[in-house]
Image (cartoon, rainbow, N blue to C red; front, side, top):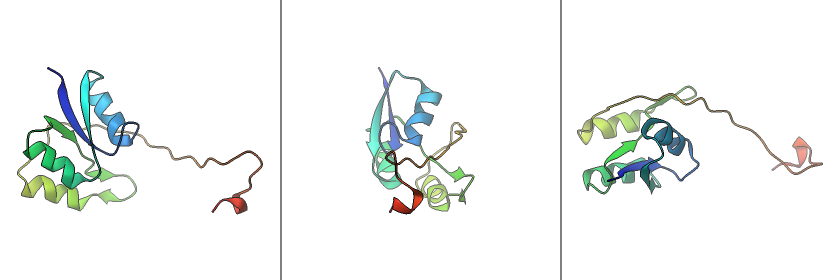
Length: 100
């Protein structure tokens, strides 16, 4: 039986990448539009595990997610680091002043 892994976001998102790195490819992903919905999937047992960011190098600790873990009596079972690089893409011939 494949594990059902809840992620915040969609396939291709940072959470999806972390889930693939941590759990492998033989899982089913439950895409969630918020961390609250992700937790509901865990509590309702429509997901076996979840990937939730609780810290990042730009914002630091993500306190609302720590609160979800604490108040919903969840347990952290692992940790994964993902190096994230953002890129700005534009059509050929565009200048930075053309981008809105």
